Picture: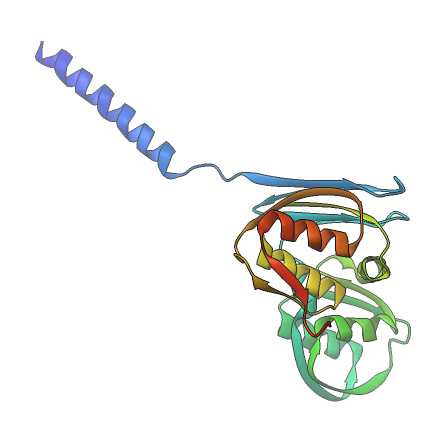
Length: 222
């Protein structure tokens, strides 16, 4: 009888410990974002542990990223170099930003001087793009430039946003478009979950505001 009780106690203990281990390490849920270009020229999707965002413009320009990925373009960059080569400049930018940057210059042997004070990383990359081909964190920068142009032109795109705090979404859009968006009212951590087709940048901001209750303005706009 004693052996039966001991065996039963051990079985219960093993079951309890197994349950404790399982509950202490819950599986993370991946968020999925996908969209199709308004002209059906492209489709894209991604899965992130956390929020994600997908933009689909026309002419095959579709992008899907984890939320917060575009914020790097608004990063302020201060750098002074004299008689610098492109490899030296790219290495310095990568060190300052902490981001992988690749550059193939049209004139590899060029030497130049730079003096940037709190320039956005976008503007610095744009300067490089005028002199060759730029990739940042594996992205073709020229394609991202086209997405900015589409958003600023008022053209329609498709958009998917999942599980993204509104302040992260606004920061992403500000860095992507170069416009000084900010939140003036509402809860910055309210979560955005939207799937939109044939919408302009203005439409997107209105929909996000309606869903989250956040007031989003372009700073300095009348």
